[in-house]
Length: 346
Ligand SMILES: Cc1cc2nc3c(=O)[nH]c(=O)nc-3n(C[C@H](O)[C@H](O)[C@H](O)COP(=O)(O)O)c2cc1C
Ligand code: SF4
Ligand code: SF4
Image: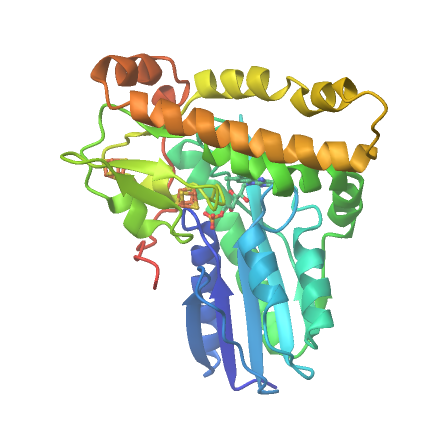
């Protein structure tokens, strides 16, 4: 059926990479040749070879696929019937021995739709529960729970891979898709706004030594090291909140600031543009234009507030204040166990 698989994986903390390795293992055991490619900002090159199966693996973000994946698929060259499968990974959790699935929502089928429009033939979609990596939000799973979730995922991925490589098809996650469609406004909000604001909540605490590992390992090149003597990371809007920097910083120096979140909330909820417009009596522009201007105002405000707070964080006192007032200093970090984290190809 296939001679080769080409695996394209986007990963923050190694979960999707681990899934890619399991898929590759099965393909190799069947004598197929395998290529693995991390999805970064470098343009993706796929194949039009009918005997190659393209495998797309990526984390779920905001009940849908990350912007990076959607963008990369959107700009793929046209194919004519090349086979593809899609495995979104999602946040599995385990509490007191009970496993709870994550929710990939529209992640798998949105990527599938884009691939179909590009001329691919989809042979399967399957959401995979891996340990939740959103360590900005929760304290992380215990090693025992991580191990349990991963062992369940491994057998699921391997039997899916064997089935697809035999020439069968498998489409899971229809209920999740329905829920994802209902939650589409949240996904949209996440993609157009929340993701950008989340990027601006990161800061390097007083544990930062300026080594630059976070910048080197960011798949989006979204971290700029700034400063004269001791450099410090600065998060750009292009960050996809993949969590790689936060979880791979060797000094656990990257935190998320609720102080900045509260500040952003208050400052951006001032309906500045509406006031401005209503003060121009007799002049009317449509609501969608007001919304668009409000959106731009929010992004500019967040950018400026972050820029100013980044400058202030050069002072040890300010850094200490921010560091003490963060919830993430109590949280574990997460890295998928047993996965070598390589510097992304630039
Ligand atoms: C910003 C962000 C948003 C997330 N949103 C979801 C979600 O909507 N549903 C879900 O099941 N998991 C969600 N997750 C969890 C990840 O998709 C999951 O842990 C994934 O396996 C991480 O893979 P990676 O290590 O390859 O990046 C989210 C994680 C992050 C960091
Ligand atoms: S935040 Fe961590 S990885 Fe980044 S420069 Fe500081 S110590 Fe190094
Ligand atoms: S800055 Fe951090 S969270 Fe954002 S894309 Fe880069 S590694 Fe991921």
